[in-house]
Length: 328
Length: 263
Ligand SMILES: Nc1ncnc2c1ncn2[C@@H]1O[C@H](COP(=O)(O)OP(=O)(O)O)[C@@H](O)[C@H]1O
Ligand SMILES: [Mg+2]
Picture 1 (cartoon, rainbow over the protein chains, first blue to last red):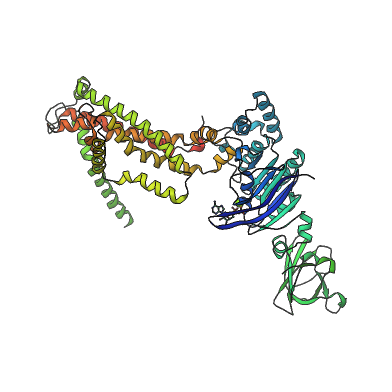
Picture 2: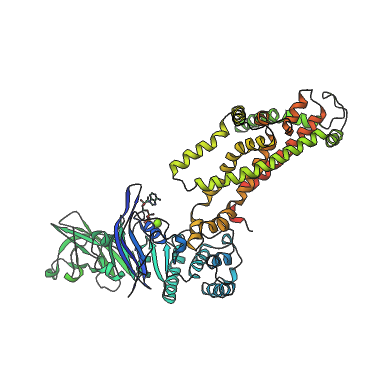
């Protein structure tokens, strides 16, 4: 795989406050990379430095091995989809989409051809002469995507593009965006604070915390072998056991419950079930440990056989291969 | 109890309105009075209005007012818009300082402004006349233009301009295709506001006008010194009506939602 964007120890300070401490990152051509982290952790700042709207305090950015620093945004071969879409309110859908080609002085014939293709692709052909105000949130989102991809950018930057939409629409657009990225082969750098979204769409996820990248890996790796405590707790649910100098993380679905006195070789801790939450095909069990002030979460799937109840005294255990040892 | 309080309140507001508008209403009424003596009503007439149009001095003052109004408000609008666009890029601290300095003329007593300008013009040996009037009018209208335009720019945010640049528009193209069209209602409102201020101004104009640049308000003042005649009432009525209309239109433009404009 070929590197398309390389960030070389870039740092960003705002009035002396370090928002992004020095950070390096290579993004591969054609990949779907997600920057995932809680709000305020510097995702937007990082994206805006790549787009050229913020200048890094130090470090360099490369696109196709060419230095990007000091090149203004309008000369960078990438496009951004803004969180609030930033559609031009005084232009129709068609004029919005054509704006980039007009600025690049593409011939009228070529403009027309690409417009029709893109309109069809994002299913906006019927709405082409409406203004943004006359569109629903989902439709506006499509216009924002169309306005960016019509330029055939090398890289598409997306800042929480689905953040303003309701849950159902977000779910279906996640799949559409993923397919669009695969079909067009454009490199996506996608910002979100929603871990489910990141899991569903990305080839790789960079988990960010306070401006630092804690781990960058495939969704499965991030989930199964988190490398830091932050990643282990931010992505999905986890049970964190602190024993002396070591921290051990075990996912709730890996926790096994036993009757006291049965298969005692597999027991690791004992406790009492305090809550059982029914979630359809899944039940969440909360177990208060006897030995210390801690509640362990365990998942029980329909058909597991045993029917645990509140106040049952149980033993818990897990396979050695299912635990993750974390650095302190 | 509640309704009684409301009655008292509404009575009070009516009293306020009467207090504010009664003098103007009387002035307008007497401009249609057939008698030369203001105190006596002797029937309706248009004759004072007609005689205004036959009066060469009135027509000259009107021409002066319009020339000075149009030129000064074009200048104030262009300069004010450019200044608003420039200070938008300043850091918050500098923006506040510059804004403060620019808005100061709005609160400085007009008589001081007039005096200061007069001193300035005589220091640089500028002959008082249309040019000094235009410069003075630009000085006091520009802050109003900037208040209106800066408000619109703030509403617009920076997203749209960034989106334009992201799509390959240079700063000039961004200005031309995105920023200017979106603040155009503000520009029009600013122009109308400046024109109204220029048309109405008396105090500052009084200081900086020359013998051949009498504007309508100055002319009216000159007439009043010789007693209030029905012509003065007629002329004032016309000035009031045009001011009110201009302000209403300016306000409509200022409030126009940029999201609904189509070109
Ligand atoms: N222009 C700016 N000036 C000062 N501080 C800023 C600016 N932009 C962002 N920040 C600060 O940088 C931090 C990261 O912000 P941001 O990149 O928007 O986070 P995220 O997108 O992950 O929510 C926040 O603490 C924010 O207050
Ligand atoms: Mg953000």
